[in-house]
Image (cartoon, rainbow over the protein chains, first blue to last red):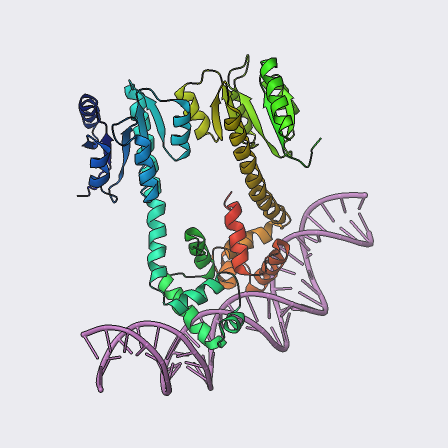
Length: 205
Length: 205
DNA sequence: TAGGTTATTGGACTTTGGGCTAATAAGCCG
DNA sequence: CGGCTTATTAGCCCAAAGTCCAATAACCTA
């Protein structure tokens, strides 16, 4: 179930650590969802839920890095703060380069934890915003007919209706119709706006 | 003096390490510039020179992190590979988050070093490419008169000439002239192209 | 098979944008 | 002061784009 409030997902195989973190964060006013193993988290978390992930590095079966990789693979970019008892430098480097917000070593100071959580939640909020904008554009793009999309691609490269018609083997009048309908469906009030929209989502893909 | 070839800058206060790295990299066919202290590097390196930076973390006076910060401040984004005898996790996190390519611990294996160097040089090449494109656009923007720039800003937001004229308190004919000259100077063959150019450099700045 | 979507085209008309020449005026520099 | 850049405006013409209405044809689905 998705909550309006951002929720901090907690994954640690050590029950005492899990409980302690849970209490600490709840007492600071955060919503918390605790998971005792990576598998439980991966099958139980909600992609639509705002929040972040406090992730233990070393766990039996699946490591925190595996969880990060899995999330990246499915495109769920929940900001991760790693918690580790004895992290090494190469692992830290990889974790951060793959997008982790921070990498904390146990025992974790409260300040460091809260600072990392605040940063992770801020990043998630920003990610969700830009992601929502892209999704809106994608939905509009999806409402175009194949032909309209074809025409639109030519339009945003700056071609004239006449040129587009020649390349698509039809006449200018037809292009004008598709173009006008595409502008409507994309809710673009100007060509400039349309170009910006397609830049944001990378129409080439 | 700038070379065509990418050059690896080496900064380490330990003469034996400096010599060893220098020899190793030269024997692998790289151009190398060795510096015995951070100050010598900062005052002696060439901003225009392609390459990367192999940087010792702990040095007397100025640490590697200080060097990184200094480079970031002046906008010289030379890719950094940190070398450290006893790096800690928080430092590693900061280094990578501030853009470092890798963080290696001594003694460094040859493979790890070469892999990091290759990655750093690749990043530098990519950075230089996109940076050159932005610089080209900036030069063209700089050639616009104040009025032409004003008009251009309105144009790329999708306004009609008529509207721009009203907002700038003049007539449509005048706007057309400025607009046409701006398109020429920017070497934009279409409005779409112009919008894309201004997106790349962020006209708002 | 009837109806909806999609793709296509035509015609008429308006608005917008761009190219050309030309003229005026203000401000700056040597 | 004379020449240069910049900013402004005018008129004319054409090309391009957008807006109506209207019609045909293919295709898929209920």
